[in-house]
Length: 95
Ligand code: SF4
Ligand code: SF4
Image (tube, rainbow, N blue to C red; front, side, top):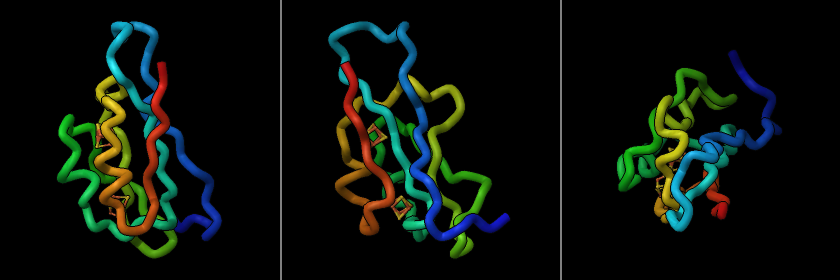
């Protein structure tokens, strides 16, 4: 199903309270309609947090999502954010 061009930012992978303190954690945010499915974020995530969503954006591209079960795995390294050519993914570091 096609989404409106001004799709909302999707918040994904909110870490649970069970993650040990002192470990950097991140919440992944995706802006689906900016994505062009280049896969950089998925391929270069050191923690293998991301995968292709089954859903497509308005351009027909599969945007990334956090893999089920990997919600606590993002270390907020921001590699995905740095590599994305279209500013379609960003990370918020949490305590
Ligand atoms: S910030 Fe790092 S660990 Fe988190 S999803 Fe992006 S590349 Fe993966
Ligand atoms: S790096 Fe950006 S454009 Fe490429 S798949 Fe990831 S979110 Fe989409």
